Length: 370
Length: 253
Image (cartoon, rainbow over all chains, first blue to last red; front, side):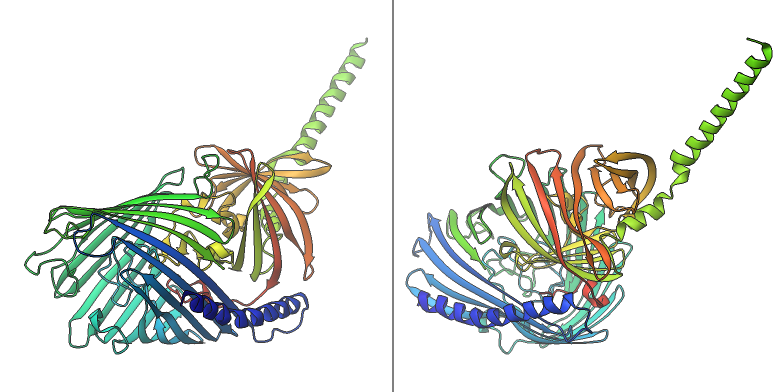
């Protein structure tokens, strides 16, 4: 089955890649001559293959200790004359746990039309309206944030199915989106959502106002911002109202040597929309802290230029539980990299992160990128 | 010596001194060179059109050996809008946008555009600032320092001081060929005064009737065994829509 995945992905990419080569050559020739510009065709593709093996230590539930996942992630985008576009990104997943299972997910597949100041999009796509790194209160159409996996390590997030119109003029942008939950997995808890966003860049503030309604659910409103201060600081925040207020405040600091620190404080109300499945409905408003430190390319250390190191921790300040994680990534040439990810939850047996059914999860993997 | 002759010699010396002073004043004082105009002229070697695209290939060398290659596609409009698409396999899906003093990076593995601080722009052998900010006249205030020879070329030396927070470096010493303001070499300094990098502008080529930079070398002055070669290709004027430079647009290639 794994071979079938690889063959299918290579076939999927080979044809458009060959076509792209021809288009690229044609484009360069056209660039050298001073001929009138003909409609421009642009094509991009990529393929990521990830093999990830995870071992769980001291499992408290009767589950296998080892999980192996093979992921194929082909992506392609085509744009015609800066007007029409089509983009697709798929995830083929084969995992071996108690048995072997395979599946295909559609991360994004959408078509776009650009006309003057307007952009129209139809299909499944990732929208990113929230400004938080580990949490979001305002990202009503965003993929779900998981503070214990803020970078979506294996790129498994999927977009929402939507029709979206954007009007962009100077620093102002207005977006209107309608998203259906008809194609979402049954357990996702998503509703049909109508959302509006106004975004503006003014005096260095990248600020947005968001409003909308979940069909059969709540109306909501939100404000987000990001701002760079001086040479080393970035601040960001979100304030959202959905039955009650949710608040996120965060900052990033970069040292002269390139080490980056991120801190976020997040307090959501304990309502169904925000509540984690491990949390009791009686627990009241929750308060979270996220801390991250990392440096990519340790070029100051001889022989460590290809290494990235990072560590982060998310803590529930109310029940004093936490999950700490450490990441190391090493690149080999232009196409390969290997990584180690260690995750350690802690806290009381009934706490949010203390409920995690293992004492540590260690993942090691290799990644090929074309 | 008669009094008359002595007086004549003094007068001649005074006249010679006055002529020398006037000559010095015209030939080498900062007032004689319009540093702003010189800098704007030199920018044209890297920004030939109001709106254009190009490709940059950066090869990093460690101890003289090439150890890494990266490819970027750059779209520039005006003096303060730059969009960079990362084309190397290891960076696929990444994009960078610069609007005036503000910069964002779009990473495929995070769920939002990430604001970049000025210090983050400096990381790497050739930093994002080296690729994205090439309009020095918009970023720096120039002061004419002197004229000196670099190899066989007579060069004007300008001292550039950051005039906006979006400038990549705090201070730049910039050598321009006296005959045509073509960049020859540069030294880049941090706010702390540390000399962080040097550049040599090695190769130029005529594109659509304009001389454009094709190759430059950046030398790391902190890690002396490291340098990067930036090769520019596919330079072409192109109409670019303003929408390309909107920070909230995430449906980029």
